[in-house]
Length: 116
Image (tube, rainbow, N blue to C red; front, side, top):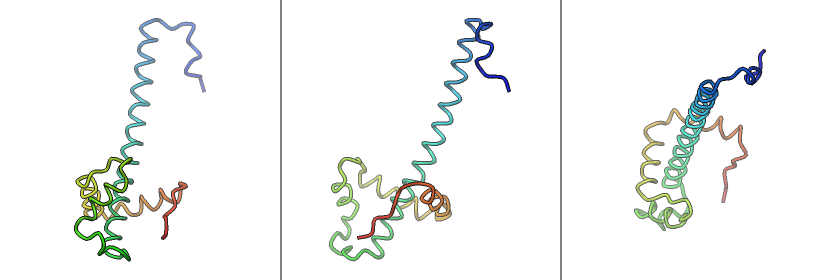
């Protein structure tokens, strides 16, 4: 296999520019896909946590209809508005098939569910 930099001594300025641009665009696209996948899983999981809490949370009555506002206020550093949280909840409800992807991601990562 030939190294991508093996012919640098024969490179023209135009080839240099083309190589840099091609490399940049390729890895920018790879990064965007990875970010999109991560944000999709994150949003689905946030929605899952909210729905499961609404259905089973021990102290859910304490927060009632204002749950999303309380979550948003309780996590100010995350800058998740009540509207963002509502969209995450809807995303979870509309796309239950993402569960397997999220489950696989959890198995391959260090994220742990917090219990109590």
